[in-house]
Amino acid sequence: MTDQPQQKPIHILLVDDDEDDRYLTKEAFHQHYPKSRISFVEDGEDLLDFLNYRGRYSGAGHTLPELILLDLNMPRKDGREALREIKTSDQLRHIPIVVLTTSDAREDIETSYHNGANSFITKPPTFQRLSEVTKAIGQYWFNVVTVCEHEGEE
Image 1: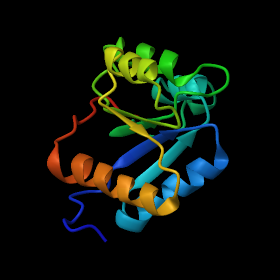
Image 2: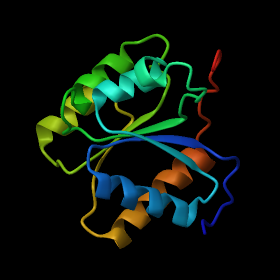
Image 3: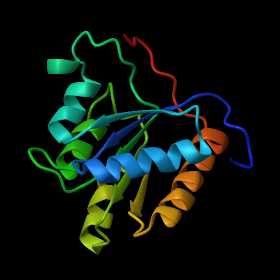
Image 4: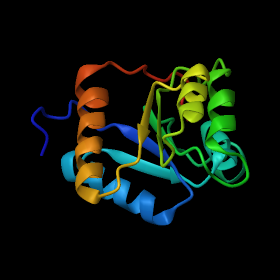
């Protein structure tokens, strides 16, 4: 468990096309933050549909996430394009986005921050290290900062 209690359940949206990465990240978060709620989408198109309540997400009754964990390399619309669109949207740009990707390319890091990412983390190679990283992400986003409350959620 975490050193500090989670103040409230937080909704995390994990955007990743790799099923194993989604599963491992969910398990790592729930190891430290069992009250967190994690939703999944597999690419940038699904991400934007989820956030804008479109397509299969229209009328779904879900809420906007307090935090997005975003992979960069995905089919259809990649994370770079989705990040740019979210951060230029008046309705969505307040949602913190942590890029969590296999890339450690300087260009990806610079582009992500330029387009509004709040953090950039290269995915760790082991579950133990992923668990440490998710604990640190959780401590920061659950216990240190105050995230924006969403108005007009369905």
